[in-house]
Amino acid sequence: RSLKWRIACNDVMHKVAVQDNESTQAGDSKSQVSAGSQSETKSKSRVSGTAKTMKSMSTLESFHHEFMQTFFQFCPDIKAKFPNDFILVAKMIKSFISKLVKGTDVKVMAKEFAKTHMKYNLKKEHFDGFGAALVKTIQNRLGRFGTIKLIGIWRRVVEELTSIMHTAYVKREKA
Image 1 (cartoon, rainbow, N blue to C red):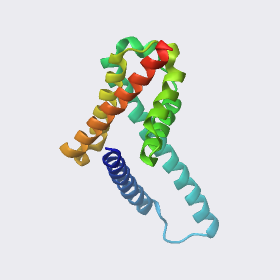
Image 2: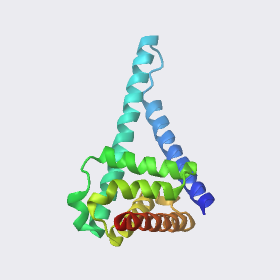
Image 3: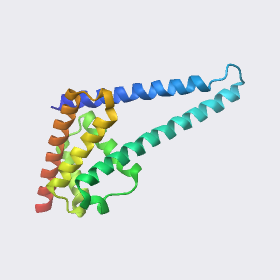
C-alpha cells in the first residue's frame, strides 16, 4: 500500500510539474526579446521568477479555496474552527503529504495530528469529510490526468490514512 501511495503521489507531482513547465515555457517564449543587455536578462529572470512564484501562490490558493469549499459542504460545522490562512493550511497538507511520500511512519504522524487537534472536538464524519474533499479536489485538479485507477488509489490511501488518524485521535481523546 505504501508503494502505491508513493507511485500515485510521484505520478501526480510529475504531471503537475510538466504542466507548470509547459505553461511557463510558453509564457517565457512569448516575453523574450531577441536582443538586450545582460542586466535586462537578469531583470527579466527576476521578473520571471517572481511571476512563477505568484503563479504557484495563485494555484495553491485556488486549490485551497476549492478544497475548503468542498470540505465545508461536507462538514459545515467545522468551518468556524478551521484556520482562514490558506498558506498555513496548504503548508500543513503539503508537509503531511511530503512526509507520506518519503515514507514517514503514518502512525507517528497520526499521533502528532491527534495531539495538535484535540482542541477541535473532531468526530468521525470530520475525518471522512476531509478525506472525501481532498480526493474530490485532487480529482478536479488533475483533470484529464485523473484516471479512474489513479483516483482509486488516492481514494483508498486517503480513506486508510483518515482511518488511522481518527483511531489515533480517539485513543488520545480517551487518554
